[in-house]
Image (cartoon, rainbow, N blue to C red):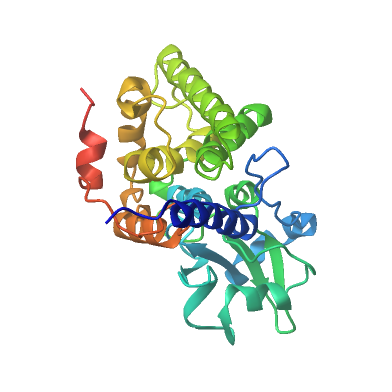
Length: 318
């Protein structure tokens, strides 16, 4: 039986209209269809004066979120295990972050935001660094870049000091380009509203990857800037480690194969081998929460069968 042409026409147009409404709340864009990530809260500068009180710090995280991954890398490298980490789960029916068990009397991240000291917010997001007092929940920051800087200022109190891997700052402009063109760039590809915005995001993404691959080659590795591990490495890893499993397929990051970036792949192996880093990669949760959680990008919610992450990492590396 042939489908009715009018039904197909109206169904297609209704789906496009409905998809755009979903994306308006899920992944807002500018007038040209380019994805625009909502800004986070400003860093509480007064907090720098109270770092000795880090026993009251909580870092609220989502295992799938690449921005959370960035902060988790900082904790593992510096062995800041005295900072309490609380993992939330996304409610895939409404997109809200929820606690497995009540946290300070709260069931969801939205409740934390509503009780915080920051007032209005667009959406309750992770990571979220908070300080608790007897009177209130104080939000320090929900910007991953700022949280990494805060964590790097804190000295660990545990006995693993000999295993600490130091990482250093680098040019802010370079970090911003990784953040905007690679970390955000994959999302700009996946959440683009039209062909023009997609191609713009893809061109910027792969141009920056070309630059970093060449930079690693010129520096001699093992890190982006040679022997010194920097914020740039922490920024890049969460995106590159998810590439084959998530971004190349679900987000249409297909302009080049990642296998063409030999220096980046070697760099990824080196980073993955650092102590504690494999434990920050939640492969099963990534697959489930990306493919079944991002409904507008994958309406049938089928999770593709893929190689194991360890096999992917070691593939294409001499």
